[in-house]
Image (tube, rainbow, N blue to C red):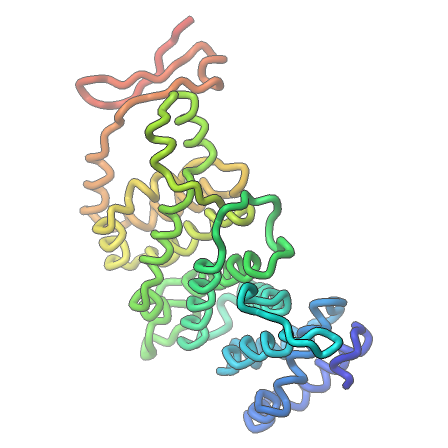
Length: 342
């Protein structure tokens, strides 16, 4: 009953009391996340998603339950069950709505916690795999037909779930050997890779239209054939492409088998194409350069593959034309050079 009171003034102290009672007591955490206790946590999340929270007790509680213990999957699933009925008790058809706003809110909070405590939390393998499963389900449910109008949160549950699951995966893959992973334990990143993480990310990235800078150059060159060869899929929120590239780049950090895998999957050129500016993806260029640095470090095969890439042609950019310059390709060396046209 207390958890259903939609008020910060009630929610904050309730979280404090529950956290204080459960801290250091696995038995009480088990009771809290059991059949009778879990609805309380669900209602707390629902309340916080409506009115917010003023203190850090909610984050501490969710960190204890979801990141430091094994109860994220049942909590995430139970939220959907609570949201399947409206206030008058009538059941809502969720077949076309795979995620609810409260689930996106939970992922948002967990993403914040993980980013703030990146060096402190040991990521559990089951948690990482569950997040990857959520990402795949969200990617399958969204049609990628609406161009991004805002950053996260967008207000659309499936898009926000897609985005926050991706930012969590980015931070899970942030450090060599996984975030906080004991070398005697399974590498969470390798576990994700074995489950198809890299294939999924590259598939989604290939399916998107090219970055804005490349699209502009293709249109100015009148290359209609190249333009239409791309899928019409677009970024569902501002920063989606950047987040995809960030996860791939973090996975490749000092992991030669990932470096090799990306080359063998013909991903080197694809990743090079992300080293450009894009208004819909702030810091895409920086993440693209970081990713290429990780793909090339200590990998002579990848370095050779990039060195053997040839410039196929050039396009006239208004920015260069305004300076009295244009790009030409030397037919012998296949290298680009700037030529003064004034």
